[in-house]
Length: 314
Ligand SMILES: [Zn+2]
Image 1 (cartoon, rainbow, N blue to C red):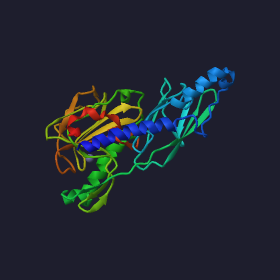
Image 2: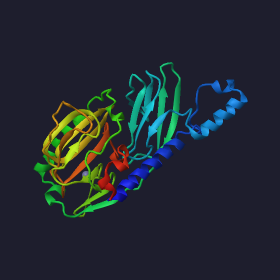
Image 3: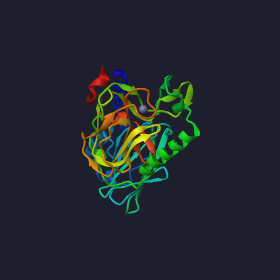
Image 4: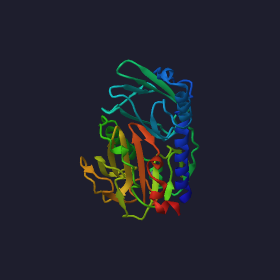
């Protein structure tokens, strides 16, 4: 379904434009602390002002998508404390920090940076609100829609293993900065955020990107990282692999068969980690790909170029 990929691409471009305007220094809640502007000559000042119209020169420097499901990186002074709302973010030795927004993120979020010299800056971020599709799936095996108590216990145990991996201390690895490639090739059969109605019953939203591909098609690591979880038979997610790309950014690949990656190993970008299957709660062979930052579920469509999956454009 080419429309989905095209929409993702235009949503990405739109989000980047929104980020630019959101990071504009004209936002009244953001004030640059330095007084260097006073020292500028008039012509220099005019030149600087015209520059400000096109670049967020004095805003906190951010890159990414200020939208629901979006992911943002920023840089500040090494040793600074960075808060998103009241959540303290990991700050790398080089000043790198990252954050992301979930599907139901509120329209604003406050970013605060406290430098090691005590100076602080604050910026109110406008988070674009998206509209999500409703996806009805009517041919789901009923036992997977309304699991019995024994299956519910399995689901809970599986989820605890996943939560343990997601809740682990983030590493300083910056593998997530590598431009991602598509983990599989094929038409998009499910998008991030859609409200799921399974056999007529409302269920949790869909938090990943579904790529339909023939059973047995290779699934590759979209970026380098450490393999944190390999499970062949989770109840809902079937063959499941989670790769850690650093700073709490992880990618998950589910419904796979013939898993190849080994837990605790480091995979290179493009390395085959498993194969497309229909294990777990799936109605046909496809790869479900999820992206998370800590406990926040991100939209994988923002991570890959629209032209990197030719099958998605037909
Ligand atoms: Zn899915």
